[in-house]
Image (cartoon, rainbow, N blue to C red):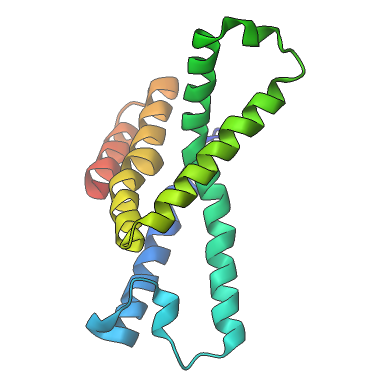
Length: 165
């Protein structure tokens, strides 16, 4: 089995049951009164548990932000190089330009996050709409394009895509 297949299979098998277990336990514990931030629902929890949960959310969101922001950064670099072709001559100093526009992007997204009163619901909606294409559909399609599976493997991949949609 290819070294690329194992992580993909683990990624497709492990997170969905974990998310399902967390959602079921949250509903069993809080019922219909689940707040937008699940951590806020457990008011009687010790402070260290709430702090640890918030840290874990932050620990998850920093790399997730990077994964979803990289296509934006790549597009910005392409547009900047098309608009300012002499930037290609900055060999060794392109990091300064990257720091500027990446910092601007982070500040802009932070400003939007602060300006939207229902940002939690908005993030949930955007996350729900983008999770399947970016985390399930595209990796499976890329793997199918590279390895051209046949028979039951191809059928299983199409079933996973259909079930996740």
